[in-house]
Amino acid sequence: MKQPNVVFIISDDTKHKWLSSYQGKPECQPLPELRVPTPNIDRIASRGTRFDNAFCASATCQPSRYSYLTGRYAGSNPHPRFLSRYPRTRPASVEFNVYLNEDIPSQGFLFGQAGYRTGFAGKWHASTLGPEDRLPEIDPDEKPDAPGMDQKLRAHQQVLSENIKRTAGYDYAEGIVWCNNSPEPLKALDTHHIEWSIQKALDFLDTCSGDRPFVLHYASTCVHGPSALAAFEKDPRFTLGGKVDTVCDALPPRTGIVERLQTAGCKVNHQTASALWLDDQIGAILNKLEAMGVIDNTILVFCTDHGVEPGKTTCYERGINVPCFIAAPGMKKGHISRMMVQNIDMLPTLLDLCGITHKLALDGTSLAPILRGEERELHNDLFFEYGYFRAVRTPEFKYITLRYPEHVVDKMKRKDPDAAPNQTDRFQGNAQVALSYYKDFFAPEQLFDLRNDPYEDHNLADDPAYATTLRDMQTRLDRYLDAQPHPYPRQVPAFMRTQEYLDFVKTRVDAGTGMISWWHLSALKEVL
Image (cartoon, rainbow, N blue to C red; front, side, top):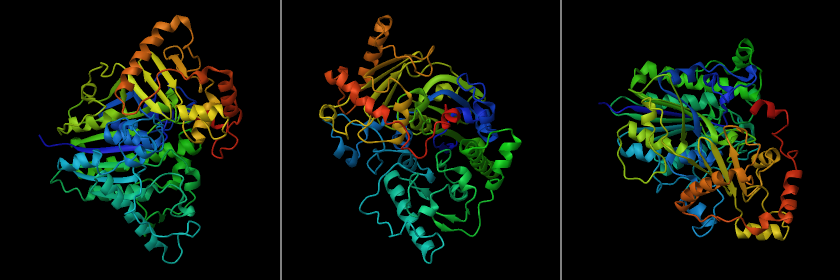
């Protein structure tokens, strides 16, 4: 049997509620005007499985993408930069700090070694620049049409391309957005470059002649900021790779998105515009596969890296529960699964479906049984980590722990203003939103009954009626912690049981969210 191709599409900061493809999911009953028609995501759903209980292990861009690409928990990252800050002898704060390199088996390397042609386009955010990656000097305040700028931007892209090829093993890497909200290389280009990135993805498919299977990894910058509505006012010819002569015509014009939303009865805002734009991108890729005559022998994946505020950067449901669709040749069509799955399962699933054998010790498992239509749990529970949060989830309960290591506790005792701004080692706007919303954010022990409290408003950890459940969940979490390469305190530090601790963290909560320029209270109605 001919090996299938793989098209892996990942979006950014995407919520189920914005996608009509998730209509009917019990937890997704939003204001109707926020649900965007997503006919192209529906095309994938009709060919395979919609996962209603898919989760990411770490709810922010970098560690989540690491898990998708490696099948491993981010806290096991062996990159020297991560280990230099968090040696194996101390607890690790998992955040925007895990990276790929040539010594870490990941999607590009593994499929390339199996004979696949591999390509990447879009947002990366999965490796770091090294001394060999010499970016050209570009003044971020310069204009995109400045003399010689095209040459500088092309050189900048070339460095990024070579980095991705070296650290992640892809044969092709073009149309790269290194990470979001960066002034580099030019402030004027801090916007979405959708037509450019999609064109590079389609260009890769043009290089796939059929003599060997291919993997395309396309990472959209939607629905993350900056504003999609502001992007519609930009000239798409000016890209991160220099000015292009023609704009990709495989997408409906960006200038028509607002009118299409209005016609569909949708509210017009950044989220809805981005969701519709995202669906257009998926449609362009699916149309290309159909034109090539290969779609029936192609595994199709659409997923997102994590949820949105107030759950982003936490272990709460709003951050870890993610949209996910997988369609594969010979598998059940139009299936809706309520089984728990996780982003660590993606790589072992794709390797399994493609018949690629390996001896890697992956944390995930193949989802092939569910794709065949079997509704049985492949996981008894799931493990999560972010900052100094660790958590375990069953279908019924969630148990979250917060354990600050000794050096952080010592800082809090000294009332060091830089100590423990949230659950990590540094200030993060996303975390500030979360701690302002979740009243038990700083509680060292948190237990939630997900069946009766899906929004995790009522902490049951100190309720005697749930003592047996708490012990069971602690045992489950201990099993995961025992397998992690970094130690993690099992006992609650005595200081975290004192009034002094409560007074200290109250100052964090009282700081509010006013200092976060991109967040406003009215956004809650659109993301919750």
